[in-house]
Length: 364
Image (cartoon, rainbow, N blue to C red; front, top):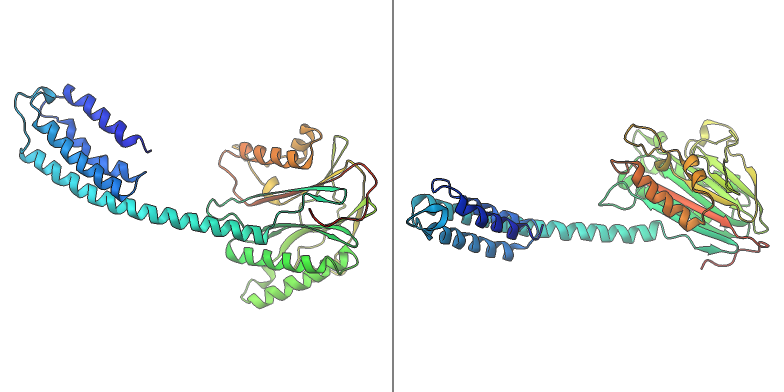
């Protein structure tokens, strides 16, 4: 874009001698200020306007241009062209100033979004005890890099507790709800003795928040979530699923979907059933890897409308460490969907390193 004005002037200069006198190409220089406004500031646009008017005059006053025997510097048609170019240049100067203000505003918005993301979705520790963790977050909106998807990993006396969730809806309300849920989880994860009571406590928090927000959609403000716990002594994995896509367990090249068929309702809908939260226990040994994700992954569509086959893709990649696994997932999602991501996407990968597990150390 920054070279476009110069290339356009060069094209006009090359074509002008080839056109008949009644079709002077120099009139096309009227667009030079607008082309400049796409990539430069108002001062550069004003300079381009002066250049375009002067260059039009040079071409009009040069007899050899377009096969003319005399110049037409002050011909009324050329004078009208000078005036129009000046007016277009004034408009381009205003547009360039407006564009720069919008770009600065957008840069500020993105900066604030990045800061908010660091506060709301702070990076998970890369290492907790014998666990290696990596996270991925992709926003479907280019201007706002945070949304209703969330994740967290907390080392507690009961083991490492993990959370991934997806707030219904979008916009500021979803971000506020995600912040409230993360705050409640970061506090309750240290206190509640098991995942079922942890889920009950967060269910209470979400129900209280929904009532505080008021309105007619209180019952529709819910969060799907998965709670996972890897005890300090290792050997097993505990999961409570609240209406969320089931996690994947990667073991020795095999990919297993951890779905017991006893998924609880999403948070804030637990009142619909009695005793909704069941703890499912699975083996989880050294070298095993857990992949938690939101529905933005599995609901990504290709050009034909087919959903993204996560388990098949992961199985075809073979064993990968968490960082490489999420990097591969990131690239594959973008390549799979030609129209780009239509929903926010989050993923959390956790791998138990070989060796005797020990009590989780403070996050690195």
